[in-house]
Length: 452
Image (cartoon, one colour):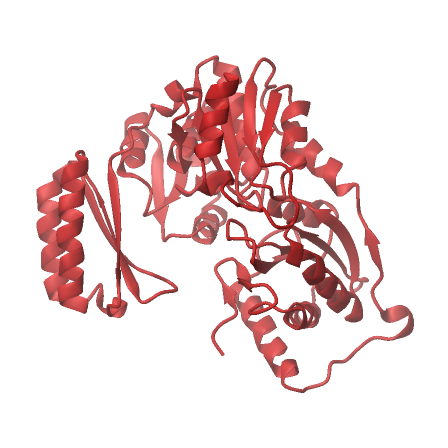
């Protein structure tokens, strides 16, 4: 069996890859593993369980709740809330475990299970590995040690989670949003009620699109992966800016008043300057991945802000931030982590902080985002090659060296093996889009020749 846990929990097509039986079994396994690790020592354990609006989340939530309660864990069911809300509530409620059912930006048929440790932090890799091993052991027949009588877990709904989370979001803002008209695209997802409520409480005039989830329409032509509707709505309503979330609202992309996209790199740049101004950017450092646009790196250098880069994936950004005490990090895709106020990427918090900067400065988002100039970036996926030899092929090293000499200091080359598919991603940045395409094409050919 291949590893169930990926970089963001267990994910697959609901009722095919991810079944009710698997959800129940993983939940029981998680309870047993955490008990063995001493997490529950001396008290009756509690878990927070939330989900996004996908239809499959209804039966998967029931399975998770049943599994936890059958293992002696009391369950607080918070209903449809964003992933960062479940993480936050796991922390503030003093729960031993959090569980979020969502497949984030994936299409509706998918779903996923993500576990949080006490405090709302991602489970350590070794605990995920142990949960998977225990799940597999019992899936094949080993009996569980099951509590009976008063030892079984109790289940209750925790409707207060909505207000607790919204109050937290509004409470951490450095200033109000009065006078701003903002369009919110909620992707028919988990933030469809939370995000508009938070922006309104903060003082903004709110227009919503993609905020009518029916269990089937999540991420369907809307949200952070489909910005066309948001761009049109911002212009139509004469809004100051637009904010787009994905299905579980752990990411945020933006649109300025002209309808132009503001990506995760630009959002990070704006927030980095704002946080430094109020002495909240610890060590004057921001963390991003190697896929961040070169324009972001150049802008941070110009502004005197140190950039630390990690492997691709918000988990690696978070690890770097926690290890070294940095306050801000994120990805081009819009996963932004403000560690003083969240333990994971929080799209609603990010959007609020971005809007707060617009309100505080009185400057349009377009002007604020111009602190960095995005260099043209071309990405080509080269399939059916031996990705394990990317770093060892002499032929490929020669091709990369030639490309880097041609681009000089105004360009960049990145070759990255896919973590899930037999392909290599070729990324080239250059000051000129035609040059970027030309260099990327030649490198893609070199990858085929050297690794095919």
